Length: 345
Picture (tube, rainbow, N blue to C red):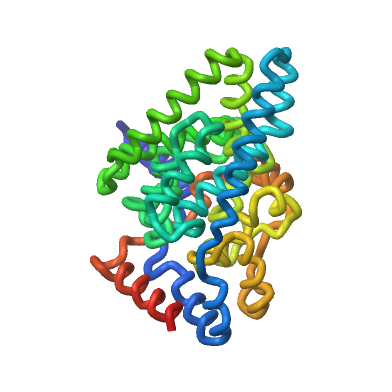
């Protein structure tokens, strides 16, 4: 390779966007301290909400009823039903799985695990227990490439780049992108008895639906699952939470739009990261309680607008994330334990 070719290659590499790399702890620990210091009454919001179980049974039942109703529909009816109805239902179920992951429904972990396996039923893909395994690590190790499964890999970001078409394909098949991250996170134990149960239950559900209602009903359920975390307004929620859509160094963003009604307030993401033990129906109270902490933060009001911004803005891509060096051994756990002590006071 000539010197001229080496210079061109070097310059081309420099043009490839990189993650925003930082050092130091993620921002939520400090804001939690400030919140509890200035508003000790926030501790009263912490606790379980067993009534959420009724929402799980209601949404699961409704989604299965729609699948049954569409069992003899033409392909276009199934497609429209999945995009206009099913995606919202499955997105809501992911939020309820998220509640179970934080043990915000029942006090015992096993009871929450069984409930999120139930919530997983219409989603077809057995992801509830895997989500439980990885999500808490996302909170404690936000931006850590070795432990944060919400973070795209460097290869994933480079392959997608800033191209509108590739970003659209990536988001449309986001469920596959998440599955492909699993082998990379070797420090996390993936398989266990709970995951096996999750898979067995889903296989049984698939068999029962196909045998009893036919492939049209199963196609509706599968498309609903893909749209719920894909190329759909509710799919933009995965962009909203941690992608750097505005300058300024803010790492986490909330959404205060009308779809929170259908999504069990999952848009209150800064509030959730700051107080993980607050159930969905009490999250808006955190913002009302401490406007001095949350009003200055940038937030989104439209997932649809954010979806188009992400797709067509050439400055946004999978690299638009904060990556930080891993914390010293035991440091994050020490701070998490300290915060739990502050909440309990």
